[in-house]
Image (cartoon, rainbow, N blue to C red; front, top):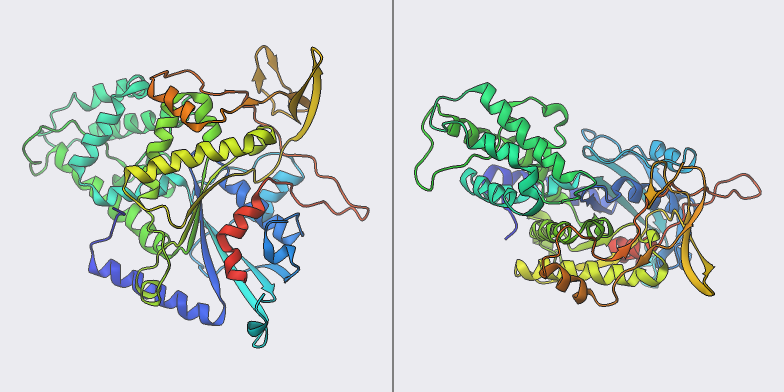
Length: 491
């Protein structure tokens, strides 16, 4: 079940926030779009490309309001939440377009408002007034979303589940030092600040090792231990799971009691405010995942991605908003799970990446007994960094992708310098998703699943028009994502 806040005060505040949003929406219709993703999935790039394509008339053939010519103007406007940092669109797009580097990843929450003036497709609606819709894009780290299930877990459950997971597969190697440390102290002895700090640091190091590129694991709560921000060093972040006895309770003043209290403080200080002030006010949500990277890292990374998706989707309750639910407890009525970096594959494999991700999502939905209504899946590339070509080898034409690999990227013995374009055969994904999951079930841990060359490319060099104006950022299926996420609100 989705996590719920049990405090009447919290529920009342959520209801008041939603009432305020709806009152504002009567004057200026708004959709609040949450954008998050699991490790290095490209949240910042997705938002930057979406906004750039809307502002600069990008090629969006599947986004009906633009394709039909009904959108007359698009502009950035001041965001409504003054206490939330602005998403620095201009800086990110400068990095992408002018410097050809990928912008820094999301480390905290931010927001941006983009407003579209449009003509309704309905002749009846056009009689009243021109349409206007503001899209408030709320960008937040995926680690924060994975924290929401903690609201339904006490400290004992959190400790037992985290330690059990840490003892499996590759995690057992990464967690060896932390697990040895967590079993050493007498948890009934008096609380010791230095012991607590050492345990918290060792636990955070274990989570960071799981997240590293060479592992690419996804289930990593508590997320703020990875992204502490201004809470670094605070008691609410200085805690870790403990190996607890099967029976008994924490004694006053003990290490166990200290860790338990700080875990509850983490939920109160970090998780609940995010749920109440941001997540509970969203209308639509996109979750970006790097499924290709997980598949390239092997069965264990794919299984961990599925586990993370299960936890993520359990946080949502997709469904149509009634007037009452909109006012008192909004539902996120559309959720899109998008596999990014489709440009790392030939177009023949785009639908295969889509199908593999859809199978992951279906398995996650089945595990939590949830209906799939309101959830869609697609493969996309927010910024297309490659183009397709063919090369002849041994008398046969071979489909390749052409781009500029980032400095330090390697294929075999070749190391790229970040300047030279090259043609790469990306490999193929399996046609049948079940064949991949059969290999996972067979326990082929540690071996890449599909024969795919995953190389990171620099952003593309954008051509200019005769007037010296940069063309819009190229993409794959970004228009399809727009149509699903808010196209209906521009009808």
